[in-house]
Amino acid sequence: MNHDYKGSKPCHETHPVLDIGGGKQIWGGSCGYPTVDDADIYIGFDGGMKKRPSAYPWNDGHSVHFSIPDGCPPQDIPEFKKMIEWVCVQVDLGRKVHCGCIGGHGRTGMFLSALVAHRGSKIGIEFPDGFTDDPIAYVRKNYCDRAVESQSQVDFLVKEYGCKAAAPSKKSSGWGGSDKSKATGWSKPYSPSTHEPKFWDGWKSPSQTKVHGAGTAIYSSKASYSGGNTKTTADSGSPARNELTVWSHKVVSRV
Image (spheres, rainbow, N blue to C red):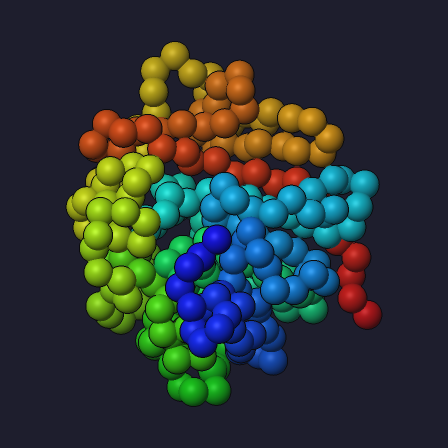
């Protein structure tokens, strides 16, 4: 659980709902300890994501696990961008969405900044504070000033979403939230060449879906092995996960 506190509560429990333009909102925080229990869609970027009833296909809702190593940008950029577009459609349909990592700052802040950038530049939605051209600043002002923790996450948003450059909210420490992830050992600034995963030889490819237990599907766009997870290796040679888990596909439309 996140140990950063504001007052007597963990910081992720104090995050306000974020206005993402067009009269729509999104909730952000911890995927292990979400502060809302009635969301139609839960998105988690960490392996500690809480399993909910929506993890089973016979229940309503979506539970989406899109794994991103702590302190890093997404490894599968095309699928991340598809997720951003999909979430925009869901919120515009009136569905309640909660997204989170561990503390709701680094990976969650990066996701929210990308969402704001997409809605501002690609869809043309105007934001109340006039921050459409500066999504990171908008998210830090209206959600949490600790959003977007590492330099590689900032670099990713600048390159892939046209965001204005900003200082990372967390200084490099060699662990989660810094530019050197405990999972990957990355210490370089973001670029497609340094953060594009290299898949180990001998594993099945391409696109395969593995089903585990009741209603749990593990999907990889590039490679998978018989266990159903996808492992990658960064330039450092350290193994890391790069997996997308989608547990359910049925959502009740709101009237």
